[in-house]
Structure formats: structure tokens, C-alpha cells
Length: 499
Figure 1 (cartoon, rainbow, N blue to C red):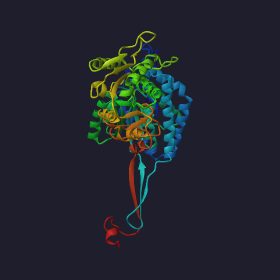
Figure 2 (cartoon, rainbow, N blue to C red):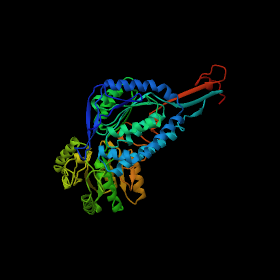
Figure 3 (tube, one colour):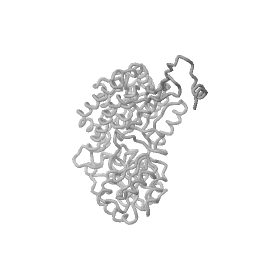
């Protein structure tokens, strides 16, 4: 008998007001029921927001280094429970245990980094233009933050959003993806054990159109952070614009790996296999386009296909598995639709079907797929598929590759394989992406650097690194005039100046 899980509101695990639940099943083994999770309502969101709002005054006045102490304890506890939580994440999300361990490590790194930032929430002191006057800034918290997270990094992305928000002195209401609610519930258990005060962090499970919408529309949540599709992000942006909310969006990608003729081809093949088929292609930074220079195109494709055909599919907790399932049936059907689109645009070189047999029949498995002869500007070359589908595009010179990379509506990540230093710096300068790697795949962000993209990938904010702390805090400007007389900026200082 599977458990009924609960929401976490005001420091207590509570049942949803609706009394209804949805199933959470293992995408590799659909007969494996992980549990029933609350299908919550606006009433549950209201309760969570009220708790977060009530907790905000005391938490915001807690010294930031003390807030950091709690997050360092969270890092310690996540380290102790790393394998346990990683196995739970693999069970509900599907990617391999090696990958979910990496997911956990990213959360651990984010906890320790955020903990240190509790002593580094710097403001500025600057000279006033007037005599006997002091001028400075400091960073202050904003209020309740609504966090909406995706399924593909069920622990890392919630920590990217939550930990900086907490360090800055905000309180939180989080809604995880309905496909991966268990991992976030385990994260909340860790925060509870680490001593997070009641009401500071609140978890409300549910569907996006119900709980997610209620969070976005709530008048007492001034800050929203969302990771997901560009289509949903556009809807959220419209609502937040009407309500004057601060909003961070991290959305789609159509990332290209460019390989020049002088590259280390073995290294480049390793990179594209990991970038395209790691996490079953379900990353916003996944390598969905492979741009090959004419001289190496045929050899590279032949060697890549030989390697790709040897990838082992299966349940991520089983030995030597390299590619897990897609997250659900709808995702699998979307990939199948793009296979049919691709057959009309390009050459299906390998894959293109559901993977069955050898224990795969009860999961959402799809063969690693490669299309060749893909034309720039085609749907395969420009639309996000979010599955194990790689589109190979031939090019002549680097200028052409840069143009092809830049012509899509997304701008998250890009990659160039070359031994040429000049080409490397051209890539850094000219590839229109938020992230560019040289001699590494399009995936591999590190917790202490900013993460995000341009164009329809985001709205200008970054997660991770030092920039995210600016999103979760406001700048307050303070002046102290100790001259003992009225001083008028831009007037007295210039009228009295001898210069």
C-alpha cells in the first residue's frame, strides 16, 4: 500500500484541503507506485503564503550569517543522505544513479556556497558630492518568494532557487513538478532537520494549472522564479507584469555543439554522447544540434553512430545503464511526433522508435535517435524536442556555424570543439548564448557561476553564482547628513564650488 504524502505548511506536514491526491509512478517501471501526493488547491496556497508572510519579519531580521549556518547544516545533511536521496530521485525521475548523485552534489555545493554568501551580501559605500554627508547602500529582503520547479533536476533546481532566497532573508512557497514531488519532500525533511524556523519554507504539491497558477496570481507573493517551457513562461510573465512582480524565467533551449576539423574527434564524440543522450535529452542545456565541418562530417557521423548504438538503456538503478526513460507518456508521444516531422525534413540515420524488450516494456523508453542532412531553419533544427533526438547539420566555415547557432529563438548554451585559440575566443564573443563551452559539451554548469540564457530562454536574470543574490534582494540607498545645515544636492555643491 503506497503512502499518502503531505504538504509542508508552517512547520507541519498537513493533508491537502481538497482531500484528493495524484499518483507518482516510476517512469522506468510503471507498476512501481512511489506514492500519492496532494492535489492541492488555492486554499492550500493561501495557507502556505500566510505562514510565509507571518514568518518573514523575524527571518528577515535574523543575521544573514546565522541564516547561512542553517544552510551549511543542510549541506552536511544532504551529504550524509546523498545516496539515499539520489536513489529516490532516480526512482521517480528516471535518470541514472550517477546523474542523480550529481544532482545531489549540485544541491550540496549550492548549500555551502549560499551559506558563505550569508557573510558576503555586500553593499557599497560611496563618496557624497556634499561635505559632511555619508552615502551607502545595503541589500534587503523582499518578502515571500514563489518557486515553481521542473522534473529534470528534482533536487538541484529547487536548491538553486530556494537557498539564495533564504540567505537574502526571504521566505518561500515552493511547488515542485508533479512528476517529481518526492525528491523535494525529502529536501524539505532535510531543511526541517537543519532547524529552519516554522513558516520560512512551505511546500505545496499539485498541478501547474491549479497550484502553480495560484502561486503566480497571489497578491502576497512579490517574487516568482520559474523553470519550465517557454510557452508557460510567457503566460507567467504576462501575469507578473500586470501585478508588478519580480520574475525570473529559465526556459527552453536548442543548443548546438560545433566541431571544427582540427578538433580532437574522440573528445568531441564523448561530449556529444553525454550532451545529447544524458538525462535522455531532457535538459534545457541538452545538445540537440550537432554542427560538423565538411571535412570531418562523414567520419564523425559513422563513429558517433557506432558509439550511440552501444548505449545501454534501462532503469537507472541497474548496473551499467547509461540512458533512462522519458518522464511520461506525453513526453514520449511528443518525441514520436517529432520523429515523423523529421522524416519529412531529413534522413533518419538511427533510432526513431520506442525501445522495448530487455525489461523496457513497462517504461517510457525511446531509442537514442540521430537525424542527418538536417537543414538550418527546419523544425528539427529550431524547435525544442526534450528527448534523445540529435540533429546533425553540415557547415563549411566557422562563420556559417555561428550563423546557424544563432538563428534559433533560444539562447541558452553552446559548445565548440577546436584546438584553435582564435576560434575559441570568437565563440565566446559571437555565439549568442548565455553559456559557451570550448572542448566540453553544452551541459556542465557549476553552482558558483551564473546560469541562464538570452532571447526566449530567459528574461535577463540568472540563477546560480553571485548574480542570483541580486534577484532575491532589493538595494536600499541610505544617506546621513551630519553637516547640521540644509544641503541641496546638485545645487549647493555646484553654486559654492570654486572649480
